[in-house]
Length: 442
Image (cartoon, rainbow, N blue to C red; front, side):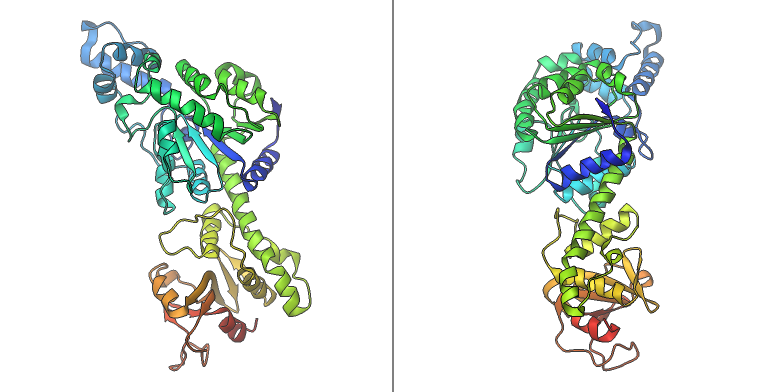
């Protein structure tokens, strides 16, 4: 396993993402990062033991300190779902706020930029992040369930089970592996993963387990998988990875295109990957308008005008939604921008006129301008659709609805004109691209 620096690792993962080759494997360490702060297996075991001791004292044999042995004890007694999961394990232990890694996975899944996600986590933080991004992350707990998902979505296979899908049969104890329904779930997952990950590139994040049996689950499901490249993102040193994750180490050693290690937090790595993906998306839109700008103006655009604004992930996501023309409460759900040069041309023209980026919008002549893709729509209908998208107090002064048509050209851009026909609402003035060229001097 070759140690690779952070930027190079992100760059390689971005290459795979843009080539539609990237899959993600996420372990418990991802959800232990702030602000999620979910407990480790060791912490869960200590709390379960303390509660057990308080309830039974010396009337029962002492409970092990090891969560795997605890779970096995109650599984053999037929009390895994009722006593262990029902009373000793905190029902709220897997609840928390999604962190930037969860948001990155959810966003890239909803955009269909990722091909496959596999996780051993039973929490639903990626799914929760998807809800905040206006989308539904699709999951399954076995090969049959994920194979039945709609073909136009990126699936997430939850190998360990899911807190909200059959909690009683989430995988906690070694004995479960030889009994149904867990046994049949694992056996159906293996062929699905073998086909789904064939010659793909895989990023492994947050893999850290105190549970030895989980390596058996991984070995049985990943034994026949053959990948192109594997990138392990983990703060531990490379030497310890083989010892703590032998199945994943063997998987990486079989990779034909390299086995790399980035010594960094998985959440930070995924956030950087999401950011670079969004910037590439916006850059593609801008470059799409460059030829038309040269044709109209007789000169090439300044190279700086063809770069995405240097803003955070939330703002880049909002800009991607605008460039896709997403309606309110809809996710950014396409992996690449439509081939519509007029959208990129509009942003280049604004910059040529002196506009500078301000968050997700542009600032020109003291006015804030939003660029929104609205192909083949009437301007007044677009304005009605987006009327409540932004609160009036923070609404831009102008929204350029690229691709829309107005019923009549405006008499004046001035807000005080009683006869102006530019659509107005939510504190903004709405105009087509043709309106913007005329009124803003583009």
